[in-house]
Amino acid sequence: MKIRIRGNTVRMRLSKGEVGTFGEQGYIEEKTNFGNASLTYALQTTTHCDMIADFKEGRITIYLPEEKAKDWVATNKVGYDANMDLGDGNELYLLLEKDFQCLDNSIEDQSDNYENPLAARYKK
Image (cartoon, rainbow, N blue to C red; front, side, top):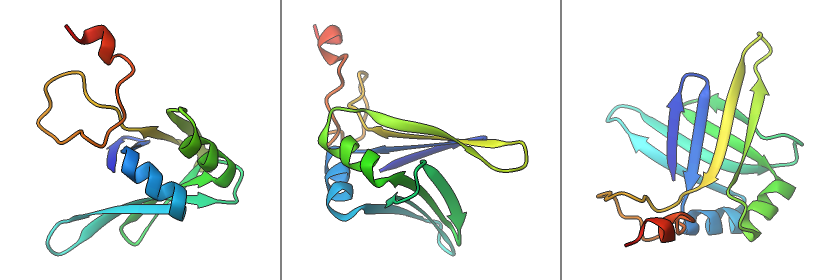
């Protein structure tokens, strides 16, 4: 599971195996340790009608409505996004995606990522 944070945007990507685990358990998390502290980021199903997020005690959690979660896991749908109203005139943009294999030469292991739909166009 990968997370990217930039300004008021949180983007989360999951590999095939992670999407499968999320589909079975309704929850998945990853942790990054910093020695004396850690950052946990998680995806969890919710009965709430919108995709929302929170940050509590060093944990970022994105909540995906159960019906959307079922659809996302069972279909080729790439992801969901939402603008979460922060109540102070600001919004937090949330983006959840299936993680595709990179088209360039990446050194990270991508064997569990989804095949990139543009891969055929770039193979020679």
